[in-house]
Length: 147
View 1 (tube, rainbow, N blue to C red):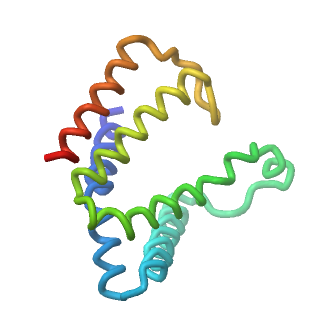
View 2 (view 1 turned 30 degrees about the vertical axis):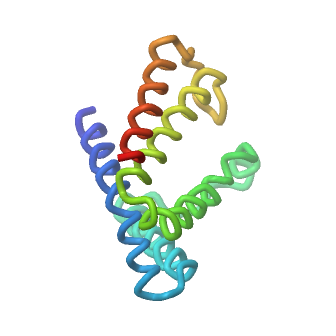
View 3 (view 1 turned 45 degrees about the vertical axis):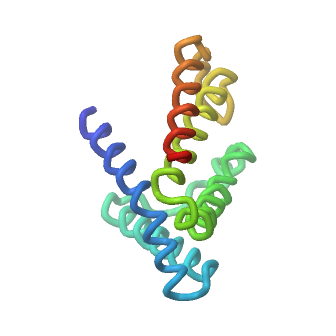
């Protein structure tokens, strides 16, 4: 279980670094959308390599594909939107403001997703403490963005 938390921490570090890398690539190429394509191609290659290493290759049966909820197919759309935001916004507002907004928006959205059990999450009530935590994050990111 500790491995999972370590992996999540590394993902958080990568989330802070990635916007600068993508924005730098966009500036160097002078083609922000091409930089997005490069970023996503590298992502696809990395995931394909992980699939080969772990033996998780091959396609699922057609009946299994038919059981996938419609909203589950939109994850790639979300990734593309995040990549485009990194390319066009991160360098303009700074790493701390950009990541603060992303993390805070993610936490507040997660509280709602949990509370209503949306997109496959189990219901986890939006208690006063969770709402207060989200509000404190909003206040904190406002301070980071302001100063």
